[in-house]
Length: 300
Image (cartoon, rainbow, N blue to C red; front, side, top):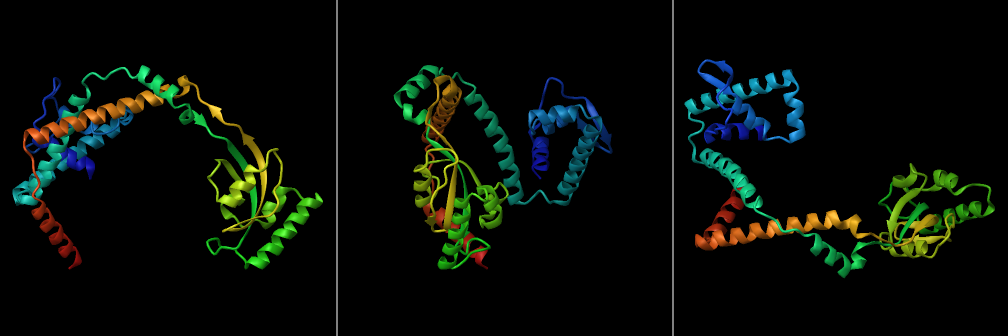
C-alpha cells in the first residue's frame, strides 16, 4: 500500500532528473519511464535498491507493477473515483509529506558543530553515567505459589517441596542443574537450566535481589528465599564488578546523541519561527466539535 501511494503521488509531482526521459515500458497510451522506476526504488532502503537493480526479473516485475498502478489509476480518474474532497485531501497530504521530507533534508544539511569537546566535557563531568554497574549472573529453582504460572501450589505445600529440594542439594547427591530440571516451575528459565542471565542490582524483586547481592563466590547457593512468586533457591554463577567505560568507548554514542539533539532543536526553532511568521492559530472550539463528532460517529 505504501509503494502504491508513493507511486500515485509521483505521478502528480512531475519529477525531472538529468537522466529522465527513457521509456522502459509502453502499452496503449501509458508510458513507464526511468524516472518512474527511480521514484519507486528511492522510496526503499539503499541496500534493497542494489539487490533489485542487480536482479533483472525483479526489475521487470516492478515495471509491470508501475504500469498496472498507472493504468488502474487512469481508470479510477475516468470513473470519478478521484474527485471526492477526501481523496483529494489524501493525495495532497502525500504530496505535502514528500515535499516536507525534502525540505527537512535541506534544513538538516546545514553545517553542524563539532561536538567532540562537548562530549568529552560531559563524560568527565558525570563519570557515574558511564560506569557499568555491578552485575550478577545467577540460576534459580522456583516452586511457585502464584497462579501467574501454569504450575503452582498452596504456600505450605510449596514450602515443603523447596525444603526437600534444599535437602537434596545439601546431600551432594544431585547437582543444582539436575534439580532445576526435576523441580523448577519457572517455565521461562527451565530450558536454560534455571539461568536468569546477567542482570544488575534492582532488576529482580527485592528479596531475590538482596539474596543474590549477599553472595560473593561463583557457585555459592542461597538458603530458601521467599518472593511473591513462591520459594527460590539461587545459585550465583558469577559476580561482575563495576566497570568504568573509557571516553573512546562512549565517544561515538555521545557525539551522535548531541548531533541528533542539535538537529531536532534546530528543527523545532525553525518550526516555531514559521508558526510565528505566519501567525498560525488553532480554533480550539472547532477542534473540540470535530472530536465530538468523530466520537459520536464511532459510537454509532
